[in-house]
Length: 456
Image (cartoon, rainbow, N blue to C red):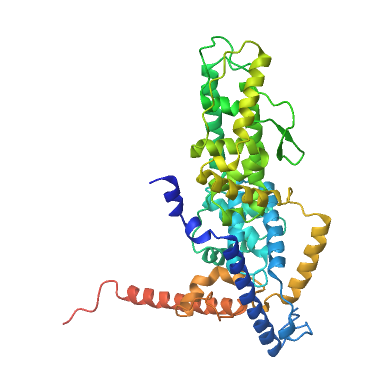
């Protein structure tokens, strides 16, 4: 079975891959359902006697006029807590895979839930702790809680059942990091092939003129150089077009590898890249952001779209070799899209769209001053439109026993609105009933250890 077929069989592709339009429609639907339930919950809260200071009860606006969060505001809030999850993972010293998995758990959770129902600050620590378990990075609960200020052990694990249910019990996340490492090793292997065929330190072929480098390493060394800006994005240079030495090309590949990894650690996590693209597309798009000629070369190599360069004449001087190689480089790398095969052209279009998404992502996990003001406004708005029946998630930890007491009723089914106080009360009653049954059963078994009385 080829790799594409293996990925298509994964839960990430079957359950968590969307088109841009379907992803937007799903978020719109989730927001509409949550807004409807929030208004109904606020209406019920106002109709019942006040038990304390509830922000929804103190709101003078009628339930019908409660201004709920928009999809854009929800995305802004979830994006902020995704960045905070990354910062928290760095604080705890967790590896990149744990950090990336936690962010994806958070994003997937809010595809079927709204921040108006469950605040992201309650779900985020649980998602990070769950990621340490699914990514096989053992961290005790006590050690995790000790590193996070104002977090209790109950807060960290209380939403776990709800989180896993919302993830549909599919905890596997496919990341693009291994694909990037494989592509990097493949490019470096090409240079090793070239180093074995030539002395590899000049612009042309040194030593025996009959020993020629293979086509692919020569094409790789003929790629146009880059002018790399402060943001790490590569742009074609306007001068100094020459054939790079093996050492220079190796340095270029290593630089592109490091910059692409940085893109995967930040921009890929802060955008919807995981939800709209495959891991292979994500790392190729990251490479396209930092070194477009190198990414195009690799893609053409994998799809068989490289033209075979003519064998250059033996080098008499370095200047003659450089000019000959440069003309071949311009004719090959600047090849119009109409001359490449349809598969390569279609993949390039997909990767360029994804690269634009990665470029638009914030370069830092810290919000700007304008973002801070916007987040404060959204948080104030959320304070007035959050579901009063879902203010806490501590009762969710006892959901299995509570579900048994409800005789199989699913608390996540549409139309059910039940607060955490009711969940805890049902759990306590179910627990008392279970203990009583165990005591009665133990008493009966203790009295009947040797069987019944013998008949006379």
